[in-house]
Length: 390
Image 1 (tube, rainbow, N blue to C red):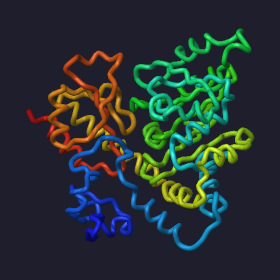
Image 2 (image 1 turned 180 degrees about the vertical axis):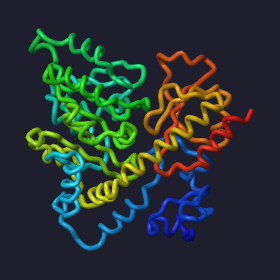
Image 3 (image 1 turned 135 degrees about the horizontal axis):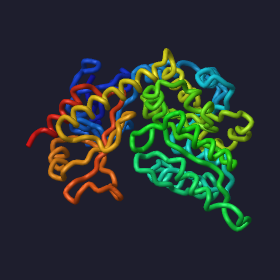
Image 4 (image 1 turned 90 degrees about the horizontal axis):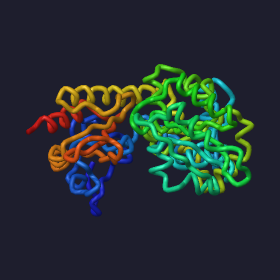
């Protein structure tokens, strides 16, 4: 493995592995040209599970799918197999549509179940509110997002009931409630129990709302609950799921799963019109097949969760207890500003988060830490050691 004349690294993509300086997952070192690259980050990285690489088994599956020819736009054996596998996993006939991004999955799913004059209720820290650049409103042709508060990242039943009570009896002048979107695991790292999901779905369905689940970290919540995919979705009342594999070790693989196939009518056209039907569709499907094979997706999620548990325990022992329960693979921690500056100067990577509404003190900051399938013990030890240094 060497650097070429342009300063790039020959052999990285060919070897299909995860390179690491610390633990040597593949036992190889990192060339100087990569160290000099501004995009290469030394030190521990808990910024996001999106900053991790691609799981080697998934890279191998992409390489295998690259041999020979296959029909495009989803008319290939990989896609048909992936669709059957999703149906098996969820224990029923479903509509399955693969897309390359979570934003596309969320926006197109919600556009499918809500008319343009509809109101979609969601948490005020949800990804569709703060991180998707108005995609839901755009693809929904003007739908309205109504944000609901919830201190631990979850919408409470009484909060939803109070919001719904503000609508009705003023048609056609007022927009109508059309959908509820919940995030599993939530943006605060907490998870909805199946009874909580069922209660919210009952309230929503009583007002003829569809219920969408943003499952960007679906697998992390699933293994924590020790529930089945069916129990955490349609058996609890979920109508449509955005199933994310990207944060769980894939390259670019998301799926919209519609639990009543009759509600999936013309979703294929919606996806095509939005520009999210890939011509070389087999490369998304191949990722899902590798992710699902022998429950690999659950193994990867369990590892990420276990690393989060370990990090949380060690931080708590150092006097830095996470703000909310650590139930998936992310956590929020309040740091003194001086410690935050020292960590960043030492090369630690994480995101700072808005602390509005939280009493954390003027001399503190709120940070988010996320573990992934590729997090190793050395990452945790290095970060905690940095936190302990005075």
